[in-house]
Image 1 (cartoon, rainbow, N blue to C red):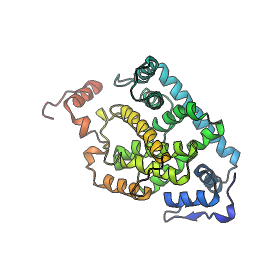
Image 2 (cartoon, helix red, strand yellow):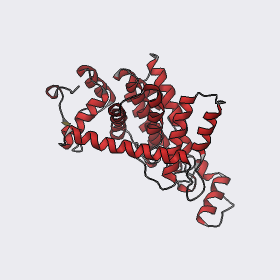
Image 3 (cartoon, one colour):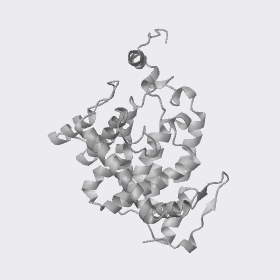
Image 4 (cartoon, rainbow, N blue to C red):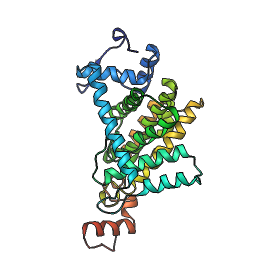
Length: 314
């Protein structure tokens, strides 16, 4: 289904950029008033702004999907980062799932393992698709390739999943931040988790409003999460934060599909994340000066990786 262009206006923002929607409320209103998926709104915006055809837009996203598939496949075979800090955990999780002893349920653990696989590939200098950043690249594909086995989507529906997640990421990027250096890990893995949750809801047949609720519920539970990479590398704790982000997205999607709503509207949650990021100390925004990076073990690992003398006074 294609939306009626006559009812949708392309507007220009203060910085000269163009958009069909400025926030989640406008995004949901557009989708519901046109009776289309959020994915369709995002596709139409891409067509209208770039001037390329629908086939080209879909083709580009299909290539992104292929990159994601290849990254997960490689990660599940087992990879190791150059530093040795990360690698092999995705394989351990898949083996654990196969043992039949998992407590969390196979679907959630499958999402977690595939999120970990993607970020392990990133840490091993492999090719990934930033969603919305390299450090948070595991959540969206991890959840997508897990729910794929439950919902049995077509290739087109999997591509739409990425457009839906992209629509919510677009809002966050333009109203808050997707940068750990600007807003902490809440802006990276937090945003990725919300994007994934919204896309899961839409793929499962939920309404645009339910997708927005899933985003809000997810992001609320990531507020205040700091960015404190050990040795300044996108490995520890980044890989495991993607794991938790994937699990968070899955649960929030189920909550929204069950009819649970967020008392704080999605746009206000996004604004709260922005304001929290603004007040977050520099030491906790990707500088490796605080948090886990500043622990004794964190400093020891940093000294070992870079071959420098450890300052015992830290």
